[in-house]
Length: 591
Image (cartoon, rainbow, N blue to C red; front, side, top):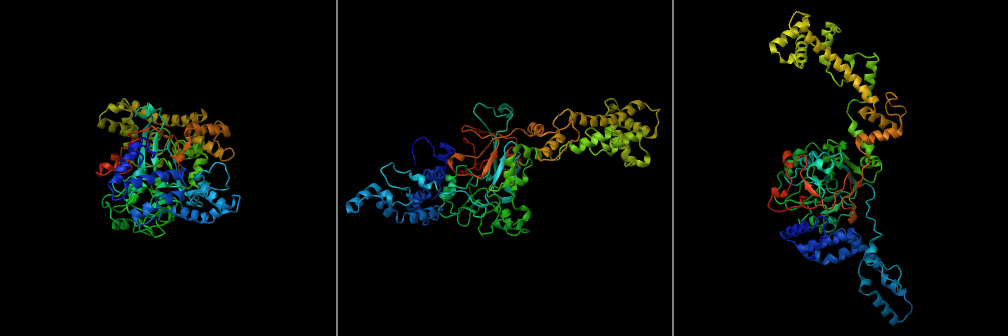
């Protein structure tokens, strides 16, 4: 380990120190784990080839673990094959046939010429030596075919922690093992209160990033941490994991958890919970134990629900995750990141439009409500036939119309007792009549029903009845007025969405949204303008498969309390609150 103050780990020097202390508590070589983690990140940055990385640590890994099944072995073996004959080709590049010339050539080649993975010599001349790490530039780390991942809209996330709860319930993880983690943060100079941060949401949702070039996988000696070929998910085979925790150190995102004790929920209990599904919610299609909580002494992290993707819970659950399914504002979008027609990619194609579609769903007054309001004002529909009333209650309107003589007794849907109770409620809401005793209100209601105008406060009661109708009609007029004033209501948003989708004349009237430019402006006013996107620590080369929409935390961001505490939902924020030993997952240090 380097002794200088600069940390190799993206989460900082303090974090790196805690990881080293954590490794010291294991039976395995902590120095080896730290050095491998540092160099694994060099591989993802392109500073070191996988073949070089494998060769550097092969002997040490074999000595420590008795096996070296790291995925970098493939690059190592390929480099060996490519190296065969390289020396001969290099020698032929030099003039001269004599033994002296060959010896001079060998000096120029040096020991590096025979080293595995150093096949950067395209031609041999007196120019500068090729960048040995550039030999790795030709490697394609992209995952062909399906690559599952997420687009998470941080501006839509409300910090409710429903995703955290859903993940725990689906996978039966212990307290503090937060595979899904949500945190609020502030930048330097900002207060903890959101209003002091300009009102903008500064929140991060942190599942595993399921990196295409995952450093955690490169340091695993047993292939326990691996990428599933069919969908690119980075998983842990609990049957193969030895708990060395090297993956925990190599992960730049702090998403790994070590299972110290026997899990709270047994495998028998998990199997019973999912007895009605095709499988046990633990073993995937390859018959590898990669899902649900980890057994004692192994590592775990977010899996993105492989048994769902394999169809074990039913075809309707394919392409879904527990966290996405539970998210009320639909901030999480899961799917194939390589498919332009997938849910996450469609979200990215027009963030404003997709946000607006989700925000407006089920909101009022919509286009149908506005059209209905116009119909009422034009006399084409009766008040009681209105489906949407901005101000008014159908039962109260029915009772008021009956008292006014506008509705026959035969047309009442309320029975006698219901009618009386509704009228009493109307009278109670009146500022003056609401001060009467219950008996007086009941007598007044009976008088209204019977038409007995000789009782006290009768005229005031009639005014209260008339106000019910007036209020409802004013509310209908208000719906139309708001629509025509270009206030951005759900109706205008729906019109704007339809216009941008190419539908002709979807507006209720020409007072609404009628052109594409105005439509886009309406959506931006309703759902916010175009937002920036980012990937966490993208510059270190891990190729994370989670894309964020919203504000990216700065290097000096600090965690603050969110709107919902983990305690409020029966969860634990920090694993240290459950166990004496430390585990990764607490973002209490710099982001």
